Image 1 (spheres, rainbow, N blue to C red):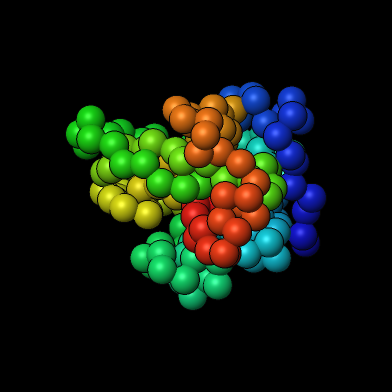
Image 2 (cartoon, helix red, strand yellow; image 1 turned 90 degrees about the horizontal axis):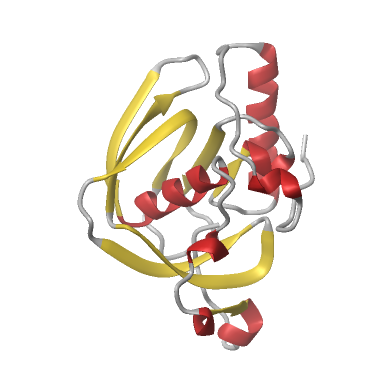
Length: 177
C-alpha cells in the first residue's frame, strides 16, 4: 500500500526512532511492503519508516535503472533494520541531495566518503557492508532519518540549496533521495 510521506516540519520527523525488537513478523513484513510500494511510486532511492509515520529504525534503499538517477551506480535492494554506521576515514564528499520529505528542493550536502554499516534484515539476519560513493551517500541519508535529521540540517552553504527548477533550469540533478 502506498503511504503518504511526511514533509519537513512534521514533528514526527525530528524524533529518534525506536529499535525493532521482533523480526520476521507479519507487521514488519507489511511495513516493508508499504515502504517499497511508496518508494517505488515516488521513484525514490530510499525511504525510512519515520517518513511514513512509523517510529521504527527501518530503512530501505535501492537504485537500479531509476530514471531519476540515470548516472548513479547500482545500489542493491536493501532492507536495513537497527543500523549502525561508522566512517572509515574523516574524508568527506559533497554532492546534491533531495528528499521525499523535502519535495522540490535540493542541497549540496557533505557525507563521509566511505562507511561501514551493520544491521539486520527483515528476518533478523545480520547485514554488514563497507561501501563508498553513491551507496554510502544513500545509506547515510536514510539512516539520518532514524535520528531525526533531514539533509538541510547538514548543508554548509545555503547558496547551494533551493528549488530544483531554479538550481537546474536545464534539468538534471540526479541526487540521493
